[in-house]
Image 1 (cartoon, rainbow, N blue to C red):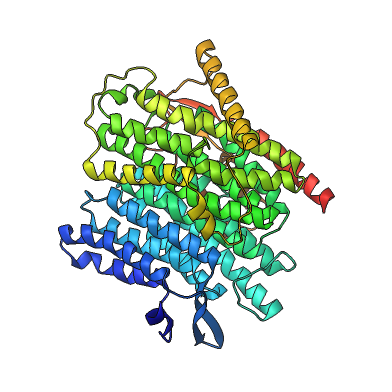
Image 2 (cartoon, one colour):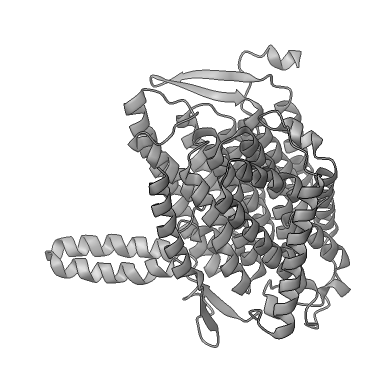
Length: 571
C-alpha cells in the first residue's frame, strides 16, 4: 500500500492490461498462454493496492483529464472485469490465434480503463477502443455471417462513440466541465450521452447488434464479449444517470421483451444473447431507482451476471467446439458423453434463474426489494414475470435442448481440460457467492443493510421457479411449447430492413437527381449497416428454412408507447 501511495501518478490498471496485451504477439504460444493468465492476476492485485481517490491528473489541450479514479463503484467493476479476463483467457488456453488473444487483452483493458477514469474525454477514448478491439473477436470466426455481423457491430459501436462525443461537446459547452460524474438530462448534451450509453447497453430497439454479433463470434470470443461491452454501459449509467426515472421503465421493458424472442429462437447462443438483454434490464431498473439499495443491487448483479453468463457461454461454446453446432434442433443427449459440461451448464442455469444458494439470487433480490420498497409495484411485477421468463429460456431451455430432450445421436468428446477448468472455477464462484455473499457485499458502493436469506425471499423465489417449471412441463407435454426448428427469427430490426429501402425510393422521387444519388447512397450504406449479420440473406438463405416473425415486434412497440405515455404523465 505504501509503495503505491507514494507513486506520483499511479497508472490506470486498464492501461497496464492494454500495454501488456501488445506484447502477446511477440511471445511464443506456450509463453503467451501463461502470460495472459498472470497479467490480469497481477493487475488485480495492483488495483487493490491503489488508495481510494483521484490520481493521474493530466493537462491536455487545455483540458484537465483525470486518468484514474478509485472508489467503490469503479473498483467493483474493475475487479469483475479482471476476473472475467482471467477466466476467459483460461478458457481460451488452447487457442492458437495470436490476433484473438491480443485483441481480447486490449478490449478488456479498454473496458477496465473506462471504468477507472474520472473525465469524459478519457472515457470517450477507451469507449471507442472497446469497439475497435472487440470486433476482431467476431471477424476471427472467418465466416461471411461473422464478417457482416462484425461490420454492423463496429458501425453501431463506433456510432455510439460519435454520439457520446457530440454529447460531451454539448455538455462541456453548457457546463464547462468534463467530469465523468452525475450528468442528468437537463441539457441536450446529457440526452445525447444517455443515448450513447443506451446504444452500448442494448436498450430496446437499439439492441439488435447484440443478438446478431455475439453468436457469430468465435467460441472463445463470445465468452469475452459477454463480459465487457454492455456492463461498461451499465457502469456508465450508474455513474452518470442514477435516479433517472425514465430508466426504470426502459429497464422493465428490457427484462420482458427478450423472453418472447428467446423462447422461439433455435440457436442456443442467440438465446443466451437475448437473456443477456433480459438481465441488463434488471441492472438498468436499479440505476433508474437510484437508491443506495438499488445501486448496490445493480453493481452486485453486474458482478454475478458476468460470471454466470460467461459460464453459460462457455458451456455452449464447448458444445459448439465439439459438435460444430449450437442449434437446439440438432442437439440433445450430450449429457452421455459431456457430463462435466452438462453439470457446469446447470450451475450457470441455476445462477441466472436466481435459485437460492446461487449468485443470481443474492443480487437480483436486492433490485426487486428496492423496486418494491420505493413503491414501483408495476415494475416489480414485470421483474417477477421476467424472472420466470429467464428461468424458462435460460434456466430450462438451454440445458434441456442441448444435453437432454431427444437423443440426437451425437457422441462428442468431453470439452478440453482448459475449458472444463475455466467452467469449474466460474461455477465455484457462482456457488461461493450464492452461499457466502458478504465479501461481494463489502465491495459494493454503499453500506449493505440487506439479508437475502429470509423466509419471505426464499419461499417467494422458490414458488416462482416451481410454477415456471410446471408451466414449462405443461407446455412440453401438451405440445404447445414452440418446437426447436431450423429457422430465422426476425426481430424488431425487420422494420429498418423494410422501411429504409422504401424511404430511399420516396426521397429519390421528390428531389432533384443529384441529391437523389447522394441520399440513396447514404441510406443504402445505413441500410447495409443495419442489415448486419444478414440473417435473412446469409449463406444459407431462406430455402428450406422456416421464417418465424418474432411476435414481440408489435408488442414491444405498443409497450414502448404505453411507457412513454406513463413516463410523461409521471413526469
